[in-house]
Length: 270
Image 1 (tube, helix red, strand yellow):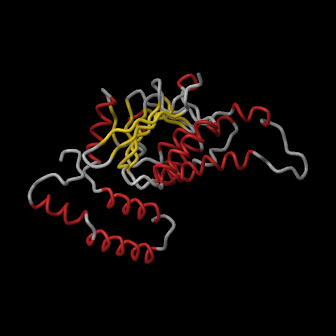
Image 2 (tube, helix red, strand yellow; image 1 turned 120 degrees about the vertical axis):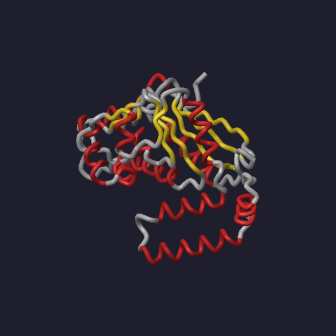
Image 3 (tube, one colour; image 1 turned 90 degrees about the vertical axis):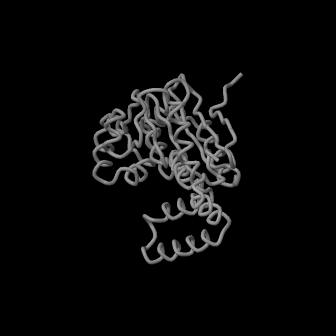
């Protein structure tokens, strides 16, 4: 029986649920095949409309996160120029990975990425979509495309957003490898995990579950719009989001819980 390329496990929180999405092709170090890309896109589309979902944890099976894009389906095209007037099928295939990265960044829930072992190429692109990145001391990060004569096409904008232009140039133009500590220094990783990754993931879930779901969704929309929206327009949208939140159901509950020195009702500790 063929193993599913993506495993999805859902568990309840005090309010709502959290899902763990596990890339599931250990033999290839979870390289991004077309089947895995399809599964991730489908999961992202479903999750975006799931009002009960609070957050997503993205991991890899078998001790590695993701070794990058799988070139198996492109083998016959490598080094082969197009015939005159022929449309290049590689373009929409590559662009679909960019659509996945956009969808992950646009999730209205928090996205935690937990990295063990390799996070290379497209795998590093997935990391750059996270709201929080946990990296085990075994983690290794790199964008080796240019050393292979390939362009890190779809991941480049997301690496720049995560790291800033200077650090992005350093990794994208050299393919140098970073361990977890170096990746933290460059701003790719938030927490380095020396021990049990499962325990670190649960601690991160509890930390993020303290935030109100609707407030998280509104804040993520503002963060996503920030690079491309003129500042006056962004501040107008932010004022509307603030007023909507203050008049909505979460603010009275959160402020009352704070005054009573209690956990809010959506918190994992409530």
